[in-house]
Image 1: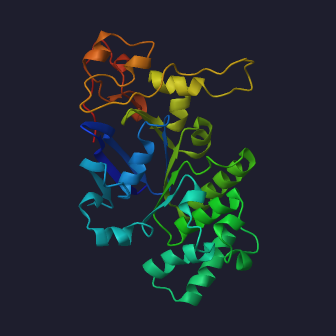
Image 2: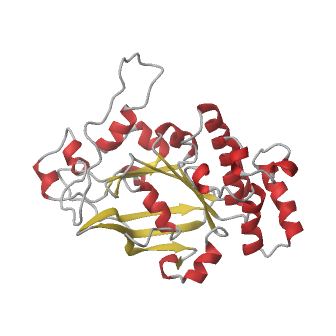
Image 3: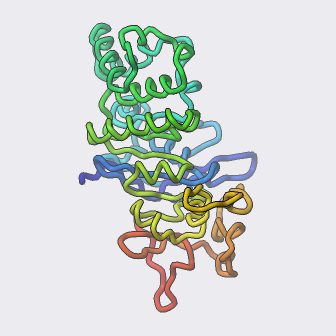
Length: 332
């Protein structure tokens, strides 16, 4: 498969008073054409900050990209001007936001909001844009699209609003779609419909997709590879089937243990003790040590790198280090 995106040592820090919070602290990954990469972890692990960093949608008052490269077809997006970003965002790389009620503008019709990308990026006339909007609404499964395009967001259900968000993201046939918790506000039945729709459209247009979620069941169904984040870093990465079959990082094991199972009769679900800590840079120890049942003195003395195991499966844990060899250097 062709390489679409290569992220190398991305660092995005938030500033709060005199402290610096390493929300994304040296994250590296890649995405190929037609591939779905899942980014998982609890709230506060840095998932959404990665997404917003990729398309340069950070709040500049308190967030700054401190380093790294985001190579799109070999060109570093971090070096692009504001004018260049206006041609990339929405056209080449688009995003489906977490909550359509807050992402959609309440004072414009859904049709006008979809058409905006077409008139800006593809210079379509008003009539051409309207015809294309009708096609997009049909594509995402909205009935009676000719009448629905004049609806305002509040006149649609949550599922319809999310379909409209997908239509906006797909308007210009982007090469990459970033979906940030796209089904969080929806009930289970509508979630399944939206996920099936996204997967069908991705396969149809061979787009690369980054799916951000805290739901391990969703990523198991949708994703080719998984990247587990904790405390602003990648703690485990590998093929989806391999991670579910044999997770190596204690945090990943905890996430998988918390999934309800029809095969087990349990009164209570497992929960990882504690919560994601608020770290300040620099961090000189394993970020999960305070919640880990396997933590030892070495975990508090230095932070492990991503240690490579079999078939490209990598884990940021000293338990991965074999006693007869040193750890591998972290790959770009």
